[in-house]
Image 1 (cartoon, rainbow, N blue to C red):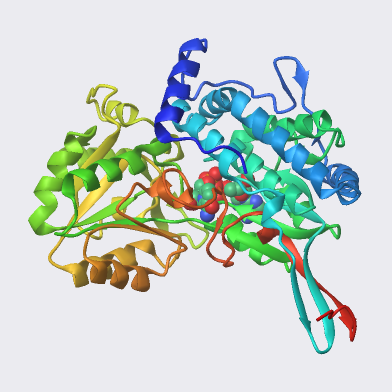
Image 2 (image 1 turned 180 degrees about the horizontal axis):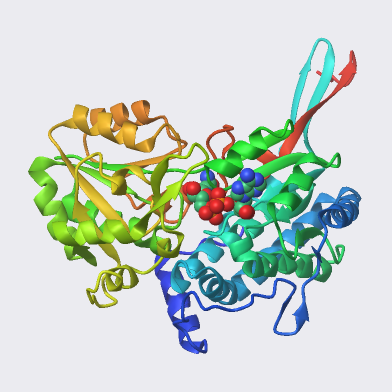
Length: 486
Ligand code: NAD
């Protein structure tokens, strides 16, 4: 496994890299024609205009991986890690410019996390069983070709993280990335292919589309060579792949609640929550989305949040912001409902405040407000640095409301408390894949917490914090009556 890197070291790297970059604060949402096939004159390897051709090329990459030693696969992965670390600033900047979402410094940290903490081939471990009837060996085999759908919120991070795990497991992989993040995603696809070539592997190891569409996703889902679908995205796309009739891994939406009780270290809880909630402007699916605070500590919590870069919205400002960040949409059933305004997702707090005519300085990284439980800021997965706080009387009310706000996603939940009974009760009730205690949300994916990293958290299908072994299938090899040598 690659070297560990502390948060302080990451910050140091980020600061020094940003200083050397032209236009360190990029203009967001620039209307540009994003080229998904080249970067600064370098043509990307593995990008196709037709999904069937992409799958045929992926099959060749897969054959090369199958013929490779595990040691060789690991060499390619080592080179992917090296290039990811070296080019993290480019991908972070590209991601922010192309999608208009997130923060360059935080995206750099996310890439370094992927490079250092995504497990490689060491994650694939065989097991053996011996007894009176001989030896049985269980090996973790590749599926074959994996079709991977990736989101706009962590585009290159997900492509690289999935590539490391899927290649370590011996698979081939074709991506159908989010159309709004196609240049960034394909930069990462090319990075993986450059790493493969540099380490003596095939020039085209993984593939992607120049213009991914719902149609190309649909061809991918029904193609006979695709043996496993891995979908990282919102509820619509996860439902689509789970209905495909193929083995599918679904990494879906979350709406992580946070409970803060009266035993918590309030100054620390306030800082941790704002750090987690504002990380990459709240884009990560694990990030804090709404807080349930005991009434007796809520004022203190808000006070310390404000000391850590939070701006407390007035009732009028909250109402004005609601009109901007949520818009009406008519569903297929003809009913009008409010949905998130995609133009506000992942934007800086100052940009959101600007939309309601209020100037705040760049030290403000999160907007907090007091609301009731039914407020849409609590119910909707906003993915913006806006954090509603709901006052509760006791732990029973806190757990009841937090579980309801999580909407049965069973994705992620957080709690700040020193009461073991409270922590245990909430963890049992909410049943999430990730439960973070007394830390920012990102500790749950290995950033300042133990354990490996992933950007594909598969709650609905149960693989959890995916890694190479999630992309394997078990095979059993039996030798009857022999090789039991004791
Ligand atoms: P999204 O759901 O808008 O899109 C994801 C991908 O699916 C895109 O490539 C999109 O083009 C495609 N797509 C959408 N509907 C489809 C369909 N019916 N068939 C085939 N493809 C389809 O995702 P986004 O907005 O980029 O990401 C945000 C969402 O993803 C949030 O809900 C977030 O919680 C979730 N997410 C989950 C994880 C996880 O690990 N569980 C990680 C990142 C994001």
